[in-house]
Every structure is written in C-alpha cells, then in structure tokens.
Length: 171
Image (cartoon, rainbow, N blue to C red; front, side, top):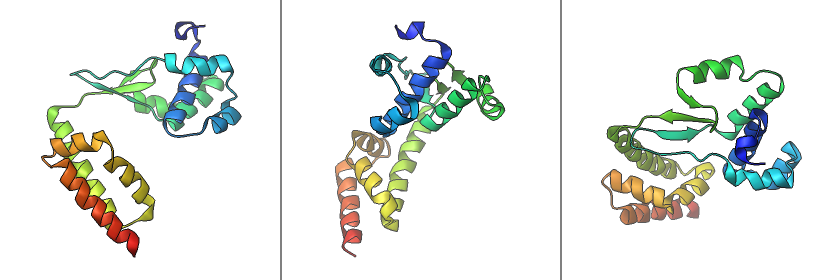
C-alpha cells in the first residue's frame, strides 16, 4: 500500500503518529495509544513532505491537533466545528495537515531577533523548566542562523549565555 492508496482516515492516523514521534513521544507510547502495524510504521517516512518556498512555509499542525482531528473524523465528522472555523480562513492543506503561512523577510528577521532575546530572558530567569530546552537550542545550527539574522556573533552570544547558565546552576 502506498500513501496515495491510503484512505483519509488512515492518512490522518499515520500523520498523527508521525507528528507525535517528531514531538518526542516514544514509539512504545504510540503503540499503546494507536496500535500501528509494522506496515503502517514503514509508511511513516513516505507521508507527504512539507515544503518551504520563497512564497510560504508549510507549518505542520501539532500532534495534539492531529489527534483531535482524528477523533472527530472517527466520530463521523471531518473536523470539529472549532477546528474547522480556525482553519477555514487559512491556507490549510488537508493532505499534509499543514497550514501555509507567508513569511516576509521582515517577519523572519523579527522572529530571529525576538527568539534570541527570548532565550536570553529565559536563561536569566534561571527557571529549571527552561534550562534543558535552552541548552538544546543553544547548541543548534538554527540558533546560529537566528543569531546571524539578528546581527549577533553566534559563538560569542552562545558563550555568554552558557556562562550565565553555569552561574545560575551553581546556586
């Protein structure tokens, strides 16, 4: 069976499993929740890929939204009224379960600038809740790109934020 032969419900179910995996859920948990077959697990990598073009970025719906859509579909509705109302005004792609958003160059620069500032604020707050995720983000190439777009030297900025995290962890 190929992804083109999947029914709407099967595709929604597989996409929900894929998104949950991408979000860090364990395969063991997903097997208990969705009970996928070996054949279904093999199809996960064949699901339609999201695309990024100069005009738009396809943002995937998160796993919880996919799960809600799956439950609504299993109950005989394609979408719940609330979900349908939220998605109707957007460029929603039902096959990929993604929303096409248009990002201008200004939007991207603003996002990058605000993200590096947000990370610095979370680190300075010293909340253990954010320490692990901030440390992960600091070591990513995505953070390097955001720093570059924000006009910062990524290595120096990372170094100063890492030093601040070490200081906070000593107390």
